[in-house]
Image (cartoon, rainbow, N blue to C red; front, side):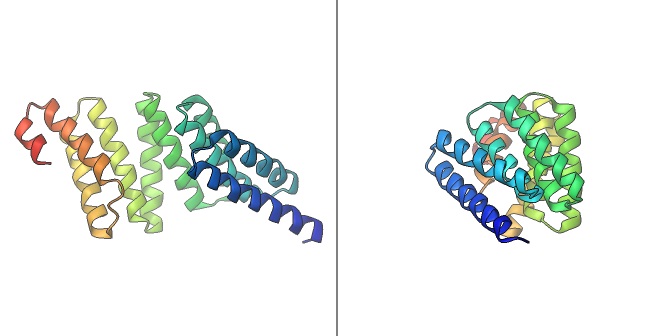
Length: 194
């Protein structure tokens, strides 16, 4: 690797890191600018793995800003690169982001397919916490389509994994959705107990 390439890669990484800091500060305009500059350098250098990371992060920013169409496009671009690289974890991760966005866009069939593919890969990789996220998304889709028994089963499995792995980050969202399912079924006492 040439010195010029190393320097360019270091600059791209630094810009990416600064972009993440800007996101943490909710300064999305600055984050987008930094990410786009990092992306341009990575693409120029042929650093596909890093370019995919940046595209995914741009997708998260778009999602945070409720620009779901742009987020979907960015996640699709990231996924395309990950598939070309045959990067199983990267594929699962990109599918994860894309699955949640397509659910937000009410494209439940596509979201279910993406979630199922991501779930399979996460299980193969032994990433149980991320697998639970996909179970949660599948439960959300089932709930949205009125299949409350299926939603509860998926939420129960996700809860079990998150409690087992000690990852309690998403339990609040899970319980909120689970309460919605119980309420939709007229089980108000059960909803209050969740």
